[in-house]
Length: 209
Image (tube, rainbow, N blue to C red):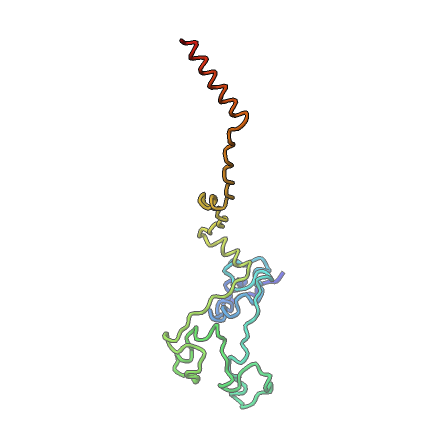
């Protein structure tokens, strides 16, 4: 089991409060959000749960951002040459500099705040609040979305059942009833029945008299 390095006072340093861990700028935490496994979680000591910026599962791991040539090569700037040549991951000239679109102008330039930024309008950092852009939301993995939904606290909309047709729609959809058949014509036996009925009624009248 790994042991935390001893502190100046002789005790062990809690990795959760390790100054080196806490000094990581927020901008870098966003760039490398869950691109590495959380060592504290692997040791069973991470207390940040879903708020941790490191991955707690391999399914949460994200691809590293492409930061090639987003900074000037210090070796080339200092000495005028670079042993890596064209394969160097850093820019050798200002024209070679490229910016990551998702982080472009999303934080204030520290050198501009000191008044010595050499990049001017080409700087990928904001030179004042008016240049700041809102950082786009990072896309969540499916496991993060399900976790955030569980801890959101807001009621989730229930699925809408398929609507049934209204009574008027049901009437429209019902097949039309066949037209009524014509009434049978009283012939033959029907005529005999009518005559018998009339004779019976005349016999009744004669008896009353």
